[in-house]
Image (cartoon, rainbow, N blue to C red; front, side):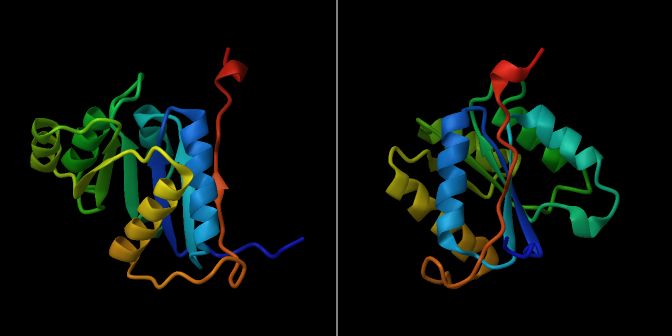
Length: 163
């Protein structure tokens, strides 16, 4: 049994598609980013609920990655909430979408998104995207797979288990 890795920085992913959450989590885990943890939730409502539970500033995520098209609370609505709240407004937000057009990108940037990216269509695309996010937002040199254990906290909800 491996020792628990301390999370110094947290990426909070909001993605309603369970398969995409799993692929994102696997790609993240393969990056072996020491001290950087991924937490995945299903939608913007869960992002807000997660944030309401945090009492200390050092518990806040260091990066939000939001799927644009979520059924309960969209990426746009979640971004708007985050940027309107003084406690969260300085945390970078990335929006990712299957089909971001120029007007959508401009709208999200105007609302405060750091980036708007196209959702990858392959596992290698997810790996490249995760690597780019970590390098840009955490200025990390990622080590080859297996050299350093990374933590992954992925709450992957099973929609069929809901009442």
